Image 1: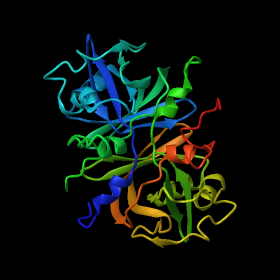
Image 2: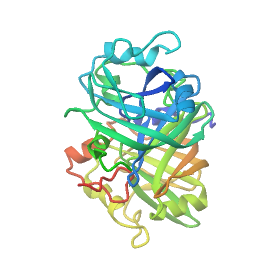
Image 3: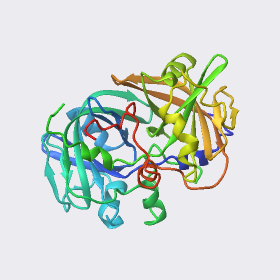
Image 4: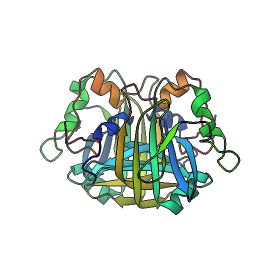
Length: 173
Length: 173
C-alpha cells in the first residue's frame, strides 16, 4: 500500500445498498452490503463481497447460496440499520422482518424492498479480509416499482455511517 | 439459466460510471464501465469487470495494470459516449481527451473527472464472457470536488443506452 494514497478517491465510487441473506440448515441470517454487482449477463451472474468476520460469510461458504434484496429508497434507517451493525451471532436479525423463503431457501426480504434475486455460488476469490462470491442467478423476483436505495443516499440523506467491516470502509475517517 | 428469471431485478442494482484505461507498450486505450468496485479496504483493492471482446481486456491481460477515472456528473454524453460505443481497434479514443500518465503508465483522464486510481492486477476470475480483474491500488489522485456520475443518472438524465458488451446488458430490451 502506498502511504501517499489519497483514500478520498474511493468515496467517488458509487454503490447501491442491499440486504444479502443466506442460511445454515434451519437458521437464516442477513447483513447490509453496498458491494453487490452483476458480473455477466449471459448467463446472469452476480457477485457479493463479504467480510470473513461476518456470520453471513460462514453461511454462504457452507450453503453455497445467497439472496440479494434491493432496498427501496424509502426504507428507514431504523428498518435496515440493525442488519449492518449487529451480528447474527447475537440476535436473530430476521425475527421482526417480513420475508419469504426463495427457491434456494434463502430469505428474500419483502418489506421496503423493490426486488430480490437468488444465486448459487459458482466461484469465489479470497481477497484477504473479504471474499467475493460469484453466483449463478437462479431466481429473480420483482416486487414493486421504486427508486433503489443508494449508498450515496444513505450517507447524504439518512446520515448513515459506514461499517468497519465493509470493503469500502476508510480507516482515515 | 432459469427461463422464468425476471431480468427487471437487475435494473435495480446501482452503479457508477467510469473510464477504465490500460496500455500495451506505447499504446493506450480506455472504455466506459459501470462495474468498478472497491473490494477491500486494507489493503485497498478494486475490481473491474471487462468483456473479453474489448481491446481494454487484452491490454489489462498483458500489462497487468489499469486505471479507473471517476466521471463528473456534469460530463456530457458527447465527451464519454465514444469510450463506450467505439473500439480502440478502430480509433484512438484518447486522441482528443486530456489525460496524464500515472505511475503505472496508464492514462488518468483529467477532463470531466473527479478522481482517478491506478491498480496492479493481483488476481482475476474468468466469468465466461467477462473477466473480473482484482487490483492492488497503487495510486489515488483526487482532482476535484463534485458529484460522481452514476449509471442511473446516465440512463435517466442523459438518456444513455446500455452497451451490448456490458455485464449488466439486458438481452430482453
